[in-house]
Amino acid sequence: MSPEGRQVTLKVLMPGDLFCCDAAALDNGTHPGCAQPMGDVSVLSLSKDSYYELLRRNPDAALQVIQYLGARLNEAQETAKVLALNPAEQRLAALLVKLADRAGLREGNHVRLTIRLTRQDMADMVGMTVETATRIMGRFKREKLASGTAKSLIIRNLAKLQQLATPVHALP
View 1: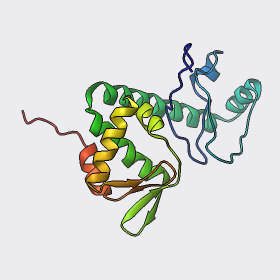
View 2: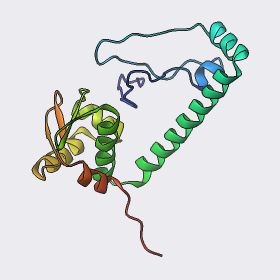
View 3: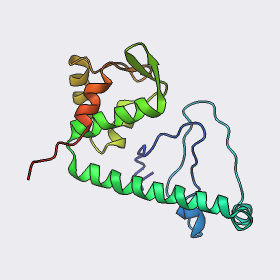
View 4: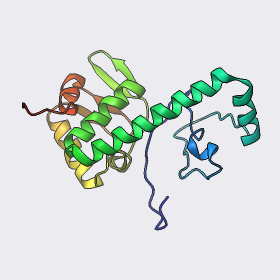
């Protein structure tokens, strides 16, 4: 949350995903964000001392944490690049493709998202205003790429969204 009280959804976590085992836990800092459940959750919590002891006694676990941190760093760098360089429509299409992969339930030719996201959530996750997200989602609906509401969002044409989400590289 910003000092002005604004919030932003940075990532949607799915069952089994880790959170707060990142650099803040290793550098004695505080985590800059918080997790907000979107439904019923179970949380396993370790004290910092227990976490360090686990890593000291389990080199394989320590390597997995290093791999996790590397993946998070790559994800953060990719997100920064996408936000800086990709057009709004491409960013929103990429988000829907990612959500379909991580939180989608195939129903015939469509994919229903199993999580509930508001237009504001989606806008925050791709660095645009809610008005822009609403306008683009309206276009996606008119083009029959998606339908529904925040309660039940349906991806109707995943292949076309994947195409929109893929950057077009200029020929040399």
